[in-house]
Length: 158
Image 1 (tube, rainbow, N blue to C red):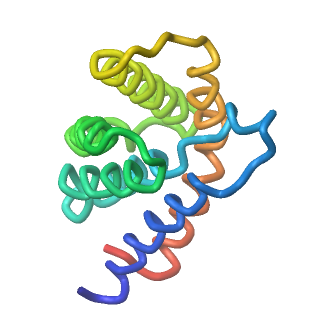
Image 2 (image 1 turned 90 degrees about the vertical axis):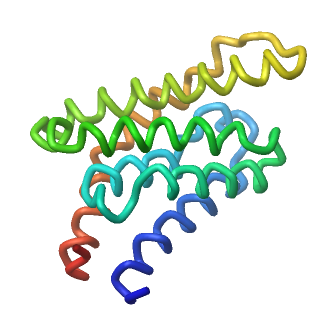
């Protein structure tokens, strides 16, 4: 694996660190989905390098880090990676703000699918605060997109 390709996986690992980084209790409900944002970016930018398998691995690592039911995030991340990689030409042609809306919808799908699977496996109840990360992820997308694109161009990752 070349050093340039390793930077892709380094950004995904860094996003996993951000997912478990401690936050104050009143802000934890608003935590953006950093691993999902990084995965979507790389699936859109380099769909031949990052795809369903990478999404499954990132999701499984997130399951291990968060202590959730093993495989739930892996399944949902692989579905989202497939959607992003299959439509990368379409998504790339949108402006950054339009992309943010798409990322927000994918994040909302992630949280609803996660809730549905956990509700199916355990006895949990829906809380409206479950959807706050979709909004904060949508708001953070332009900055994450610009930062990752700048890094991809600086290191000539193709």
